[in-house]
Structures are given as structure tokens and as C-alpha cells.
Length: 169
Image 1 (cartoon, rainbow, N blue to C red):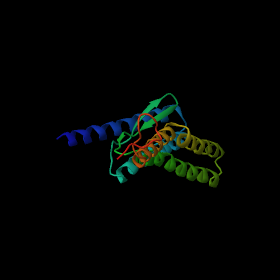
Image 2 (image 1 turned 45 degrees about the vertical axis):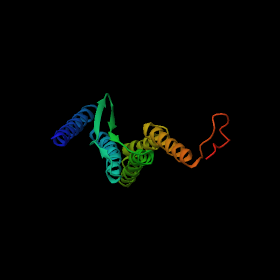
Image 3 (image 1 turned 90 degrees about the horizontal axis):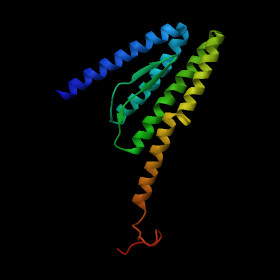
Image 4 (image 1 turned 135 degrees about the horizontal axis):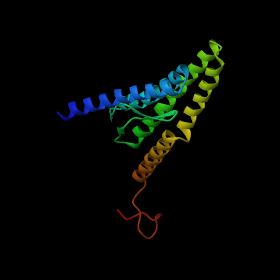
């Protein structure tokens, strides 16, 4: 019963925030700009979602928080390993970069100068998100945790006097 209730809540929240974000972007921005922003953001978040599904985690569908002229997207995932968390963190920016580059190629192909500028800017935002933004921080934290876990498993137990003197076995 709980699983059904969660699915209904998750799906309704996903749909409601997608509609609210679409209305907000339509109200504040030109249609082409809103479509570009929302497509890239939606596919970025779905990158996190599908990577979590592929790694057999339990993700929620993404939801969006519209604010002013922008949008924040989030995908809730509870991971059971640092390695899975690192892979999920990088999946969103990777998909975002690919979609942004495709958008940039289409804008160049149609010679639509404002979209060229905007799609190029979106490529930069996705690169920032994957390196210094929240996804990059999440990736670095997970990799550090995974590395520390591996090192602590490989290192023999040491004495309290010196970390370099192994305990007798």
C-alpha cells in the first residue's frame, strides 16, 4: 500500500512541478528560450534518474522549483554506496552537455543567432554544474568517501601510539 501511495505522490508532484515550471517559463521568457531551458534541465534530471535506476537504486521522479527567471531541478536518490552516488552525480551533467551541444548544433544549422548564444551558454552551465556546481560537489564527496573506504579496508589496523606501527595479530 505504501509503494502505491508513494508512486501516486511522486507522479503527481512530478507532473505538477513540470506544469508549473512550463507556465512560469512561458510567462517570463520567449517560447524558444523556455523550451531550451526546460528541455536541457528536464533531460539533465532524467539522466540522474535513469542512472539511479540502472544502478538498481530507488530514485524519485525529478521535481522542479520555478523561481523568477530560472528553475531548479532535483532528483531524490538514496544510494547504498559512494561509487553509485558518484556515477549518479555525473550522469545529469553528462546528459545536459550532450543535449546542449545538440541544441547548439541545431541553432547553428538554422542560423538562429540568439539560440546559438543561449545554447552555448547552456553548455557552459552544464560544464560548471558537473565540475563546480552541486553535482560536481556531490561527485567529489562521493569519490573521496569511496577512496577513503577502500584505503581503510586495505590498510592494516594500527596502534593508538603511532598510525604507522601495525598492531600485533
